Image (cartoon, rainbow, N blue to C red; front, top):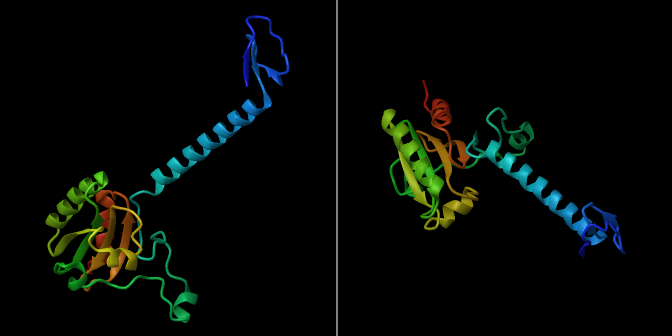
Length: 184
């Protein structure tokens, strides 16, 4: 409850006086505290999202400097995802590498990602770009654990998934990931 006393500065039933006659009760203080907590949490989430969005990661979602654990290989459960074939994509694989982009019709970052991937694919011989509508290929979306668009997969010439990026990747990062996918 907020009570305004015109210049009297009284604290009639209030918990605190902010000066100028504005009295703040305990429930308002807890509301202000909650507002500050929510603002801090939203800011932290936004900063985390900005730092991780569009980063090229390993095929299993781990940062590129981490390899699958030895325990996973020992018990036969690889953390790397299966490869993709031309039948899965509905388009031929590139001779040397393929950039696979999952997008949706109303995804604004998908348009910019399409431009970047098309540009990279035209610059490098044997690299193709395949764009897949996530809404029309839900089986692939589930199989590859695509949670938002754009999601980009970098495949080698045989269709094995080398890297993935969630969000709009930078052109330099895509070229770097292709360096791992293209032998020699």
